[in-house]
Image (tube, rainbow, N blue to C red; front, top):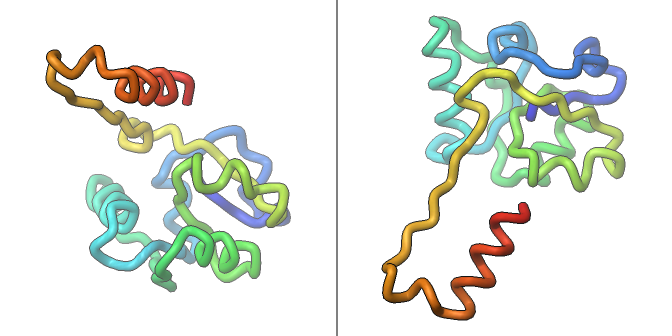
Length: 127
């Protein structure tokens, strides 16, 4: 999700392509994190460099920096949706194919009948 303050020019969008946000200052997690790599790689795919003005150590810090108007951020939905009203932020889905993360759970078939594993699979399926 692209996260912007509620008064930001992009706040009214229903979705947005990554290339459309590169003119704005961006806040990201520190170099070496997955989200930092995704932002840099997404810019490289379209031969444009994101304007990374601040690198922080947590999603909480990213939310607070965006709230303060210091930039915009790309944050996984699970780390922004529960907090967007609290911080007065807008979360806009990115329409780029790379923005949809697929997670796979791999386990031994012999463990497939384990009750805890079944609970985990059910929980993840509902998410």
